[in-house]
Length: 249
Image (cartoon, rainbow, N blue to C red; front, side):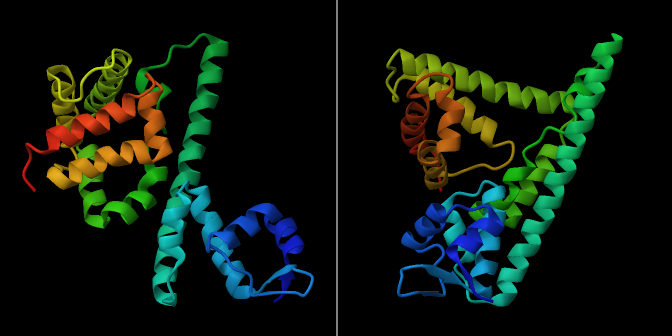
């Protein structure tokens, strides 16, 4: 198998510019490059590209993708792909459930039939992040987290989500007021945040500080907090760094 960059772009929908970027950052190199500078890809490169694109569909960051696909162990690659396959099937099922929920909502709105809160939010969950969570924190941690979440009834689940939203909103207000991360208000809020996280996992000093750093370094998590006010994520990180010193490892 030998496809040039134009053929690969046409078949996969990935632009030539993106393929050149993947080459530049060492994520996907061509099998060989012609005298005219045109990149060519063989079966090995295309399988790697498939793996990359699966992970991109699962919204895994590029640096994490690089760590996952950089293995010469075919058995490990197959095992990882099996995990991704399970995640994709779960995502398919989740979207099917969401589509049914929306369809029921439309029908009931048109007919004036009331819906319960449980009916409105059936199918909403965070399963799309599970492969990345397993890569970042390990299977055991994810299994414990899933078990803890599953042990809650729907009222408790909603209360847990509402607590996080309340914490994030309060962070936004403190950030707007240029609050001191070491101040009583910020530290009290972080204590609530640590308790909120501890439903699933009780982080020690270094782990909690690392989690705080991730809230700023990962644009998805930063956006979760900064939508409540510019600087909210940084305030949380800095306040966590202070609070973490009171914890044991």
